[in-house]
Image (tube, rainbow, N blue to C red; front, side):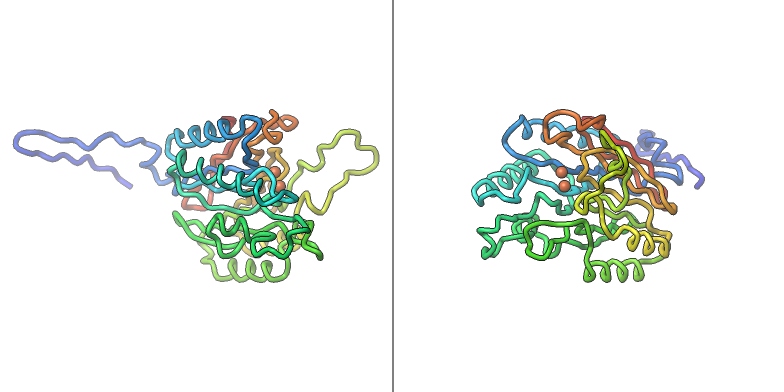
Length: 300
Ligand SMILES: [Fe+2]
Ligand SMILES: [Fe+2]
C-alpha cells in the first residue's frame, strides 16, 4: 500500500504524524504476537514465585508487545496425589501472581499435573479436572476462539484411564469428533494454531541415555492418537502450527507442512535449572495474516 505523508496545519503549527515502526507498516506485519508459556509448575519452593514473576515481566517488556499469552498447562506444581490444602495453596499463589504481575490476556490449557488423582477423594465435586476448570473459569477443557484472523484450538491431551487415577495422551472419541467439526466449519482461509499440553508429535522422546535396541515411548509422553490427528490435519491445510509442552525440552518438527513445537518449560527442570540442554524459557510466536509465522524460544 502506498504511504502518503499526512500533514496538518493548525494555526500556523505544522504537525506530522509520529514515526511508526516500519515493521508494522508493510503488508507482512504480524496480526498477533503470542507468548507461549508452558509447564510453570508453580509452588512456593525453589524460588519459583520470584522466577515466574521475572518471566512474566520479561515477556511483558517485549517489543512489539505481546497481545496474548497461551498457558500450555502444568500450571501448578502438582495436584495429582496431593491433599486439598496443598492444592488450594498452589492455586492461590498462582492466581495472586497473575493478578498482580500480568496485564496481558491469557488463555489456558490443562496439563496432567493440573488434575487431582487422589483416590481417597474421588467422591468430591472438584475431583479430576473440575478443580482447575473452576479456577480458570472454563466450562470445558477443550475449546476454540478466533483472534487477529487466526483460529485457536485448545485441546485436552490428558485422557483419563478407566479408573480415573492415571492418564495417557489422547483426545478420545467425543473430543476428536468435536475437533473434526471445528476444522470442517472453519473458513479454509483462516489459519489455525493448535495448543495442547502433551505433544502431538515430537522428537524429544528419542533423546535418551543408554539406548541399546529401542527407544521407549510411554503413552503419557506423547499423544497415542498421533496418526489419526495428523491424517485429519492433512485434510485441512490451514492448520499451521501446533504448540505443546510436557517434556520440558524444546524441539521443532515439521511434518506435512504443519510445524509441531515442543516449547521447553518456564520451570526448566522443575525449578532446578536446565532440563538437559533446554534452559527455562518461553516461546514468542508472531502470527501473520497469510498463515505464516515466526517463532523463537526465549530464555528469560
Ligand atoms: Fe510439566
Ligand atoms: Fe506435563
